[in-house]
Length: 213
Length: 213
DNA sequence: TTAAAAAAAGGGAAAAACACCCTGTTTTAA
DNA sequence: TTAAAACAGGGTGTTTTTCCCTTTTTTTAA
Image (cartoon, rainbow over all chains, first blue to last red; front, side):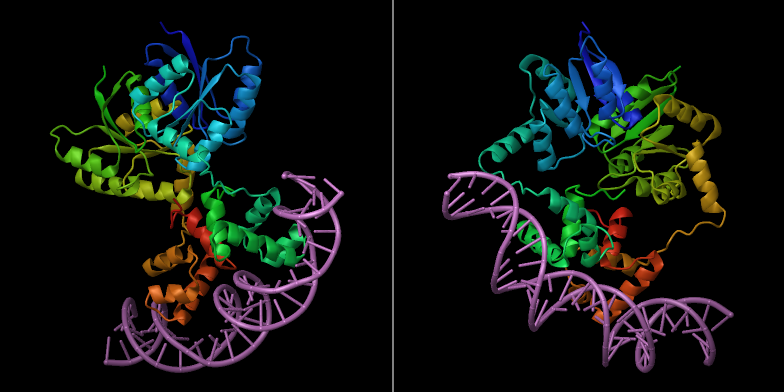
């Protein structure tokens, strides 16, 4: 009966164990093992002869986050089905996760029956999208993808903006002229419909470009 | 055997159910019911003849958060033991929660055995503190409590600082002269050892005075 | 009830941020 | 291979922020 193996990846051990306990309460599923972060999962899977059927993956994790982990995992082992499980309901994050190869995305505030249903669907159909996620996907794919693309250098700049440094000091740190920094700032103001540096800080934090720990 | 009742309060239903499943796997404990937020808990408890023994309370919740809920709950029903369960490891939050009347504080990244131990201790001793929390309490009580106290108006100001408004606009919104706002800012710079407005924004976000949703 | 403390308001000036103009060079893509 | 886009930088002026001060008003406590 219990023939479908699940691996739970979550940096909060108690939560991982709790979810594992829940999974074990489902008829057809059992938890193979738990991992505290993405790196641990990749290391562990690499050593295995028999791969897990499903990985229940948290998105926000230290060391190697859910998105990166999913990217690498699905590339190396396309047969493993990743179901993202997160508190994060930002469109951008969901899209990123699905692009990375996740076969479904569940918010942590769904009912456990939904989780069971999701796992079953994943086995039967190979994917599972809730209505919300489907709608999101539709909008995203129908040209409406106004995902603002930031360049590497802009992201680097944004990180420094979220500090008490002046633009002059940021320029020094990036080995650029203060004038160039002026340019970066103005471009971002335009791109993000923002008026001042406070706006940049709020944007960077909201979109997790920097992490205030 | 299963004679100690536990109520789980967490806004993420799946997590509440998962933790509940875990609790039910412990010998002496059973989950009485789940709540999605503090208000729901208070309403429910008010209707009951037999109170739960233990409440496993998340700290960050919508509608009525863990701290406020604990305050009210322990005031009305001192016999109920609240065990805080959170991802939050900020000293300030922990102190607040314990001051509110929680009998223990567990991080969500502990082992499930610790949870079981905590629950047992709670029943036997009436409280359960991990080593970390004990140390924190010590430092906090031994005069070393340099918890920076912000005034209501300062908090109101800080919230507005975390927006794209200029100080002049903030002054208007608070019905004060821009010069008074200058004063507020300078006082906070001094208090928080900060150099500029960006510092204020970072502080406010880090200490959850504003919530970037 | 009076002295002290805190809150509110203000003047002035330097520094930083912002806005808008511009010129080249280097990459990228049609 | 050529046009467009991205990148780096310059000049100038305005606004906002920051940091000195001082003064008035309100609150608090002795």
